[in-house]
Amino acid sequence: MKIVFRAMLGAAIIFEGVLFLLMNVVSGLPGWVFLLPLAVVVAAFLLLFGGMWQDYLRNGRSWASSLSETSKKFGVPRKILALLVSEVGSLLAAFTFFKPQRNVDSEVRSFTAYRNLRTVVFMILALSVAEISIVHFAISNAFWRYLLLVISVYAVVLLSGFYVTVRDHPHLMTPQGLVLRNGRRLICEIPWSHLRHASSVTAGEGGDVAIDEHGNLRVPVLSEVNVKLEVDSQVVAEDLYKGPMMVSSIEIYCDDKDTFLRDLAEERNAH
Image (cartoon, rainbow, N blue to C red; front, top):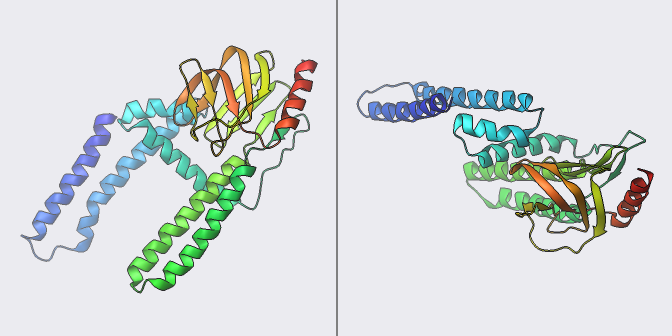
């Protein structure tokens, strides 16, 4: 599949180059001819997207598990595939900006992890709206004005979608254990029988999801974490960019840390 995918992209590039050479030799070439290579590119990416979806279904609907397989099959870097999945997910999530999800299961308690993100996101969105208005009236060239308008609106929608994915995917406390999440990017399930210790921690450093050689995972929100969970035996954390990871401890951020730790202690005593 890797050879077919790359051959299609290579053929499209060569085809386009040949057409530009012919343009200087043959007069009267119709404009639509130059769109033919685009059809080959579209077909190549449809093949890629179809392969991604098949791998996703085959791996239990887990992008974290399937993207490595797709990357090897098509020769596309995993990070690029992860960025694609993340961007599409954020764009779709933006349409539910005004419809936050609600927990309907009485046996499941949810703990949000987005309040420190909310202030920053809303400030950026407000500045973006102001920037769109100023740029739209300041640039006289119609092409550049509308191009920058489209780019700015796209960025606003993308940021809104990212915020929604974090808002609508809180940490969950279930009868079976904990479900720790970071938007659509990461999920880690810890059964009650595996949980050894829970404590509060300071913010630390770094704003990206990171894991060390000992399996200590850090999942910050705007560089902040405030809860650390340790397990007796390693559990699996699935990350969109890093894939499945074996975790011995995980640091997370929770809006209501004290309530989370109190309820966690009650659940542990009950189990």
